[in-house]
Length: 207
Image 1 (cartoon, rainbow, N blue to C red):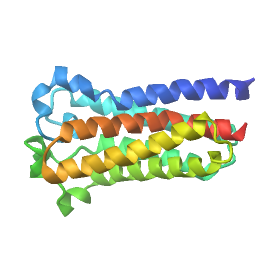
Image 2: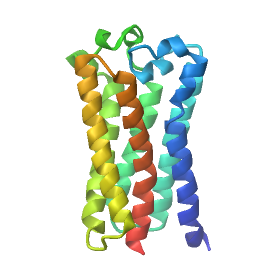
Image 3: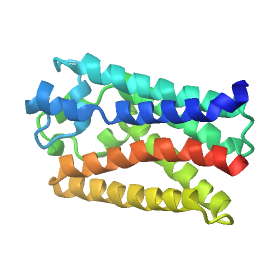
Image 4: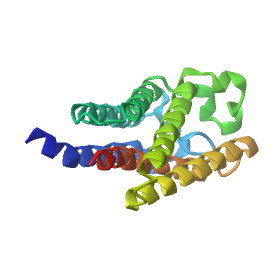
């Protein structure tokens, strides 16, 4: 009985996690001055009026991902390493939210940019871990689903390519200090898509 409900519950949680992860556009309404040529993460800087809201939604997103990982473990998904990687994404998201980006990034993206001190900051390390875990999961799923060549394989392939392309666009936009909001929007959106595709594909692959 419980096992039959895991897939629909997982789908609901995954969609919820993706939605919470992409809640930041509310910043245009609640704190429009914050999103001016800087990182979207500045919405979570302690001094911001609605930082608590964006921190909370990221935390809830991370909790949803952890709950999905727990459900996948209960379902005894064969490819446990991808489940663990998915769980690591949830943990990284929690750290990402709890440890805010440097306040100097509030002014403009070039104030923190890609300096070594910024890249090795706890916040950015958590963000990098999020990227690594999602790309690892999607790459592994392509290998698992390749034999079946079904719609799940096509969705995973499409998601991986777009995640990598938007990630590259994000890096370039930071280097040239332009199009940063657009690049982050696309990249975060693809993270959300990955959060949904990965657990569904893992369950489907076991069927």
